[in-house]
Image 1 (tube, helix red, strand yellow):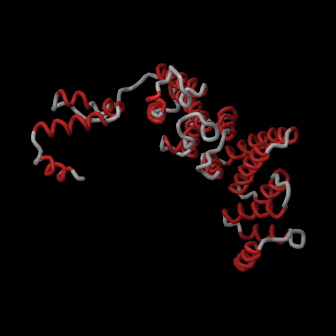
Image 2: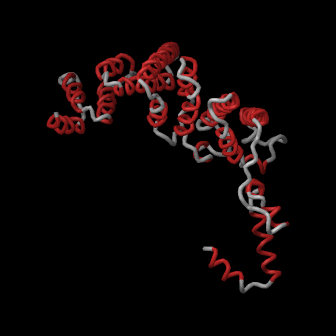
Image 3: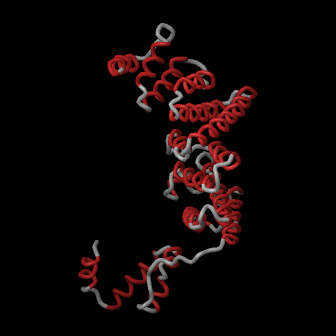
Length: 317
């Protein structure tokens, strides 16, 4: 209903009926909306502004509030009965996080307060990522609930970190963020690309490659000690990221060689080749795609879809 239509409808009501409507609507307005838009003051004084309030909150206060929120979430207080977080408040966790996200991003990244804010964003990112696989809040879809995709949240943190200088320490902190649980609502490549897209210079990309390779080795060591799917999965995630950066540097053979050396596929070698060819296709590297395909002719039993693509791409090069 539009405002003009609303005005026409309420004309037919008596004063006591209008009063009833106002009271019922007021009951249904969430507390945070009442506070944000000064609803109570507006009711008391019609000349009061209903512009959304934007009171600046100190970084010290945010540090305490975010730390307490994460402590409660880590103790499962947002998903189990307890006397610390009232039942009515447990489902409102997303409003807290949305407010934290906005407030923390209001601090310029290259200031001392901004650095603290970025670290708090990292803490929120990690608990939300954890919550995508382990019930921590009232919804498994934690990033969807706050309307900020995991890839976007990650990109925001990386950009803020690197705004303070592209050092090995800062970049290492950013690479470490790729060790979190990946949101099933997003394709893992979206997360990896969000990181890669923040690497703006050649030097930064080479530095990132070395740090990512260190992660590959660490996850491979875990994989060799305990043959778990997650260990294999993260070896492959970091390997894909290294290969993608090599491709962005036009070092195609280095990328292909690294993929063959590190990527883990236990059973069907054709699946491994399919994944590499898909990466080449995504970059429209048709010449490299054809050469790679032909290098395995007679060694692999390619699926029909790849055979068709080979005919198509062969004509392009």
